[in-house]
Image 1 (cartoon, rainbow, N blue to C red):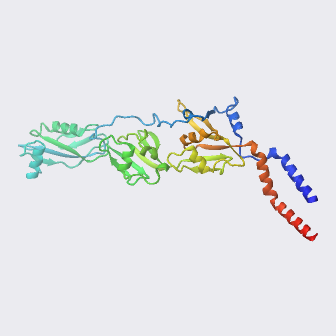
Image 2 (spheres, one colour):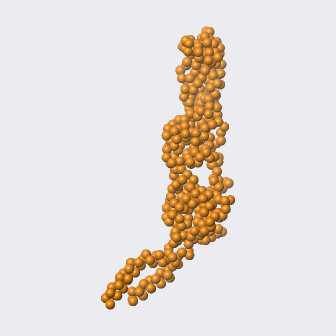
Image 3 (cartoon, rainbow, N blue to C red):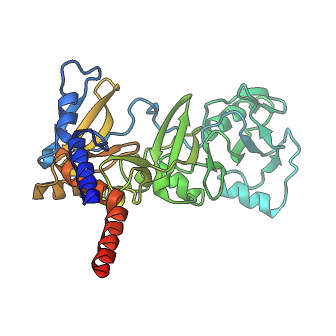
Length: 383
């Protein structure tokens, strides 16, 4: 009898301490009240997700980070390029004509020159840092920013007073100017020559053998003239606006950067979780988190905390609120796309405190109740 009274006293004291039970975080009403309070230090915006129009829009690609430049000619000459130069001469020759025979005649005829012309193949000429090449008898010629056709005309003009109607053919042996550098988690890192100057990021990745790993976990970083921008590989490969056009001189690096979101509050787990798909929705995020706890959670209080850039490019905090007790919210949550570093919060339900107390008492005193039942059984058997 004394033992039963003791248990009753413990239960009464537990009920009296109900208000002081630990919680997993604020309730939904507490969050909304604190976010909208005039004295709040952060200018927090609260968005009620009640229809399709209230869903957050897909953020635009970074603006102004990469300079939008028109593509240059594919045969533009610049420092580091190596040129093959062939000079055709008819009649009295300046260079003596090291080339002869049917192959030279055929090449000359194909180029529209006199078949009797002799050809001189000059040693490979590298464009120096200042944009000059050196031609025998003509000296230094500034070719920086010129096309191959323009360089041919310049060399021909410089030799006109030394040779009888020279004809000049110039081709690239090695191209540096019209190329990009590709590195990181790519199959074939290195220098990639652009053939059309209309290639996009996805084209560059494909030409370099493709990326390594999961697209949703990779970021492609583009450095152009001291400016940079980063895009998700999954977005680039999907053909979105983030598949920007590359430009000669770009440095492209693919880096591992898995996207994650954090789960807090009255959920099945409190953890930082990775994205399981390239475009993860709120429904999928809640499922991976285990959903709202039946003992502590409030389905009417589902929140997503996120920083959103305003028109000035500044980050501002935004809280999205969904009431999952409404059937329409489940459809809206399928259209709500999660972003990297989002915080998914399951609101605590104040009405569930008595249930939480009973669960706590059951866990604490179940061994005592078992002993009490055993004692009563022994007493009954002895009587």
